[in-house]
Length: 247
Image (cartoon, rainbow, N blue to C red):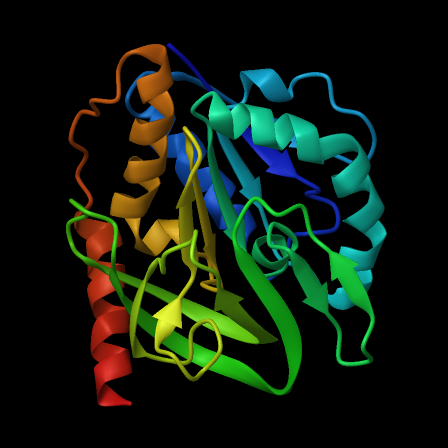
């Protein structure tokens, strides 16, 4: 069975170890003998987005976000919306998360309208949130039920009524440092997950990677995944949990 990962703007939106998320999705699919591949979706019109099962949209600084802003709206918005309606999944981190919302406003007051796939808005804050994050996830059936990662952002993101939090912050600041939420989840046939968890997220959270793969494959008639030996990955997960608790 084919499994295609679509990497949005890998040349510009790729900081804080985001490449590890692509490698994790690819390897975990290959280990299950799926015919897995990665399509790099650069600026300009893309012809192969209909084949993508999971899109990844990484983080970038304000300069990089400004460079892809018009292209996202002109060449990617409609195809992303249709892909999710058809059952595809999206994982968006930091800058990608912000641009999938309604808008991102910089510290200078410049506003970039997003594409509205997630019911969130973001404004730049005066202080950066930096450090380990531990989240009690709201996604049903994930084992373990925690997600771990590293945040480094000044954006303050607030959820509207159509999005629900990815989870509750146990350690760290999360979306905005005030309401104890982290990330956002929204369904439109497929599913969209936005988060501030870098460093990178999926290698230390293999259960979330499998959630994305399994949900994407349901549109092809089979979301059941064979078990893998995740002892090393979960050891890394547990070590970060312990480090966060010590702090």
